[in-house]
Length: 458
Ligand code: ARG
Image (tube, rainbow, N blue to C red):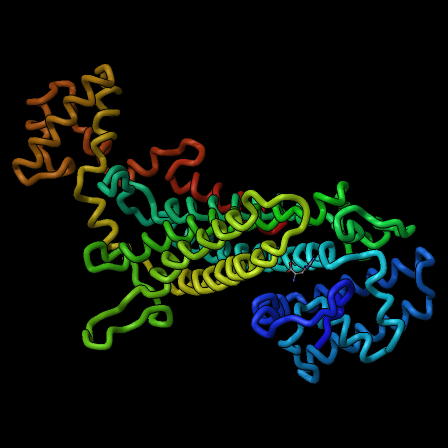
């Protein structure tokens, strides 16, 4: 069939070229946005006196009926169309006749596709934000439940200092809060209208770009028409934000995998979010967490695919840019699916607080507190650190921990040590003492929870 763009050529192309050129299989996802954009365009054309009010209304009614029929399933996308923009326009003209042919006045597919992608990503980023918020609520809920459950905090995956599980969980809430801020910030740059930039140079028609942008709810318009049709920064930025979000989720996922292992035994994941093995009847596998960790690679790949497509492209539009969409769609789908499953998994997670406590009781995670105690007795920190180290080494040799080391044995290392050393190395006291803002004391964790709640409830 001859193409809508048949002009200098007859529009006859090889079937294999048509298939290769077509983006309808993936860009039909933007049908709703494409129709919304076209409705606003028809309104602007009438407002500017480029088409009549009657023509504009005919176009808008036609577009509305197409949207309804697509949503109800009455109208199927014609997969032989070149892209979603051509499909909608063809369908419109089929329904309303000549007025349909006027819709594409003072625009091009170049600004149209940029518009659709921006509208699509505004919708997607709203959804992603809502899902992050849902996950933050789940994390905060668990942090509240376990705000005084003591566990070892780690550095280098070695037991380091006592913290509470609630405190550890709140670290993730803070990361997710920053992810929220980043996406909100990115939305400001997505929220700029490219429509009216036309093919690249703007238009000689007396259009009103600001009217059309306002109609669509945009905060402003792209101020350079060449940039407006060439810019995909907003998509690269959202995909970077998603990559960072996924990096956070993958760290969390990794800890869930570790914590749920027999070796750690810190948590159990609800049966609703684990899988069994096909041959080992005892297995409870943390597949959801592993998949989130794995899909992080995919989200990074999407970002790199997009950046690579854009790299070195001359201005303005190039067909390479059609390749932007699948990465963008995939990254958004991946993030949304991971956020949903993560929130479910966190809600159903229970902490084995006794095991956490037991792990905290070994590994000398109160050694820093012993050193601080010695500083309190007048030793310079470096000397206190060495003495505490020697005491720990002795405990290791004799199979003791700081809580069971005899006072006389302590005194042999430093005569200034008194009975109050046992209060210094008591795990609960170690946590309670860390009252510094952002620290692990229960009061501090409560303050963190209150802060995060106040921000997400805004
Ligand atoms: N399907 C195209 C895309 O996704 C739409 C823009 C086509 N523009 C053009 N000049 N061929 O990028």
